[in-house]
Length: 479
Image 1: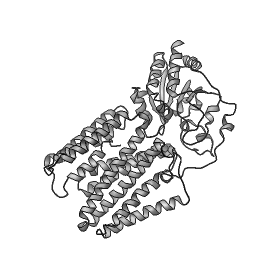
Image 2: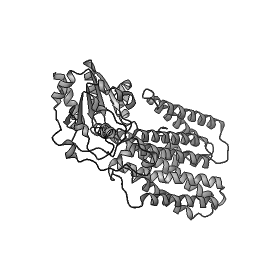
Image 3: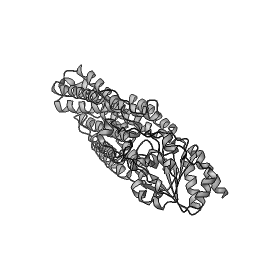
Image 4: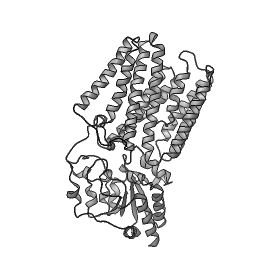
């Protein structure tokens, strides 16, 4: 995806760049260089080894584009630009410093929300300043930009609320939900078409805006927490498409290029995430999760759970030659990434081959676990995607599952009646020994018990993810 700094240009370029006057040659050159930097940034973000370079390239290109826009000859007064820049930079720095790794998905959702709101507000201002002599094509671009911008704003706020758990993470449904949602969207589109046909009906725009905002809410509330990684990618796509449409509105090619890159990459990523969960795109979009009656926890776990201590885990690891660690959201909540990095170093120093198995939807946003482990400086070549490692679990001595649940649930593979049937999982149950670190037997996002925990080769270590890892390290040092 295009770096998160992209929304910074959304409002600024649109408000400052004139519609008809040609750009100075140096601005054109800088914009071209910025567009190229976005392409390279996206390319480098595709690999763990070059991701940092990709982020820096995107930041450099964005900074150059903003400066080129600010110093256009037409810009005379910098008071509000400077004030807004200071306030925005201050908020951004605070968010970057204070936001924990577990809240990065929420921060990403908020970034999408306010980037899309900037685009929508520019569209609104453009419409009211020129509606008396807008062309149908110009009005159409404004309508498309504003529709996507406003629905992405409210949709992203709802997504952030679900991720932060200030709103229910479960799907919120009501009778005739999809017909009502589609009716609201149809009314918003009808208002947009009416404005295209007759732009002078300025009083129609507030209704169009309210319907767009309402649809954003209705679109996300029926989607459960387990689908949030896909929703985040999809909202990123909407925000990018809104910015691209704004590029047509204000005649700015850099916005068109950047928005198209963000929109297309977000959409492709959301499709990849749907495939990873064996869900159709429409099912995720409309919150139509597969609903089956799940087994009761007592029936699955009754008398079958085997607990273990840190010392016993250390004894098992002492004789292991190959260990795979599966990180999950519980590891992120416990802030156990650095302790996990220390465990990796401890085992590696003993000659153990240690790898990390990464499920595509582990955590609450695409790449969440990759970012988490990168923070602990765990070498990239030890991170294995699901397709790389799934056929190798038969040869693994010990798997340590720290905070993951649904992504290692064998019911997805073996039980056709399970709510998660067909979802690709990590086949950890095929390893010789599985150690699961969890606070309790509480279910994951899917809300169903995990029969892995009752398997003969599975041992449960009930503890906080960070404390458990540190206890295992101390026990290893004594063996």
